[in-house]
Length: 621
Image 1 (cartoon, rainbow, N blue to C red):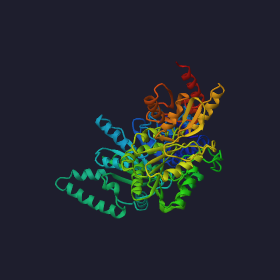
Image 2 (cartoon, rainbow, N blue to C red; image 1 turned 180 degrees about the vertical axis):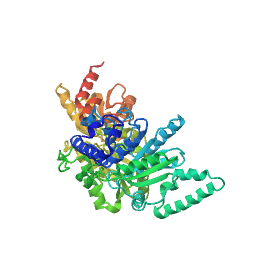
Image 3 (cartoon, rainbow, N blue to C red; image 1 turned 60 degrees about the vertical axis):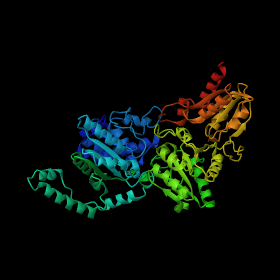
Image 4 (cartoon, one colour; image 1 turned 120 degrees about the horizontal axis):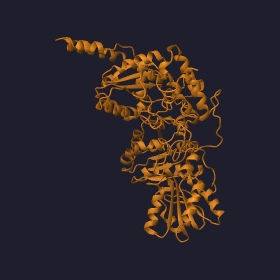
């Protein structure tokens, strides 16, 4: 195998050029085989094989720097830098990350995981290089989906004034997770079909400038003609108009053409954008036909592309999708917003049924929230469906545009809590904290699928900003008999005992039931409370328990700082200082990737660990 010759960075340069296509095929075969077993981001990586090979042929690692936007297309980069053995533990606890990690390799120049950050980071590395008098090359690889994010344009605006070589590779496959939408996509489509124009080479440019008397005038006239031709051939010439040299488009699966244009880009004395056209999922028919499904794939059968573990029970996203459809049918003022995630958030069905009331704004969470605020101010009932870790990007918009005006926007926060294999950048463990800090924001968390449905119905008619956070995975269908109506600010009594009160937030109610069984074996009968509302907390319920409960145990799948437990502790400390409180929450750290059950045990929020901590607390004087 050619791939076996790649043991470390820069080994690809030892490969005979006639074997490049064979190496690309072997890389695709390797990735399909490994990801079919571990799961991971397949489609984006299959589409970037030749592009990554070309970058490694032109650059010298680790001296030169590549910043991968989001980073889910960096698997080939990992292969070409000697990490082949790590794919057996890809995205597993203690194993190789599915994203670039500086601590994993000195060939990973910057940690990524969220969209539209690579250009800003690249600009920082360029400026650091120049200030330190260094000469290496910096390349930021960004997808056309990520280019819909506003942060990318803030960086492009700065890049135009850089005055130093900075290579931007636009990996254009017309996909983010789902198909790209909007003006940027349409603009790039125009370039794809109208991009043959003359380029003024640096050698000619500087040669003419050196001509006495008439040199600058000649250059100016040629530039005017050149730009005029570009305006005719390429609609808008957006990048050139910003002062960024544009090269392309280039076939992203032609290694010879890619290496040629990248070498040209290295010689440009300012920011240069290389426009590369790739096909997401290339080389694997199921991924080519269903690129959205193979964006983040579960383990699958190679021959069919179907998941190895067929889903039997509905997950929380499915429940949300079903209820949104029903609510949309009953109330035509309900509208849905997503940031390039109609499939992931479950809004695809709403989109298909109510296309005029569905809005995909691209990878632009900040815009999504303020757009929702405008919809609400206009008399509609917007529901913003978003992953917890992505909503972090819109904190200012939630505070400034939604909550100051007390507008009725519902935030359906998927993937709240530990999400597993994607790791630090995707764990949804901060939303209770950052949302709780905002006046006028109200927060709910369902214990099971029935309560998610009830809470969503409550939220869209609430009339004020409200967030509904629910976890990833199979929806808990226990405790169906406990389905009291949702009343603002009121918790729910699941079991009345004495001595110990277990106050669970959302997914942790199920854990509270397990802890109850452990304590029952020791002769104890703890009370179980389903918090329901994280903000405001149910002070009346807590107060009612103080007569016959000495220990209050709060349970949440969120960091302790700013979370549910702190609120309960503050209330009890001020009003019942003699009562003891044990806060069970996530530690003040970033939780790495791995199986959720393993992670819960490692951070101490599994039933066994909590039971031990309760016994320890009871043993204290």
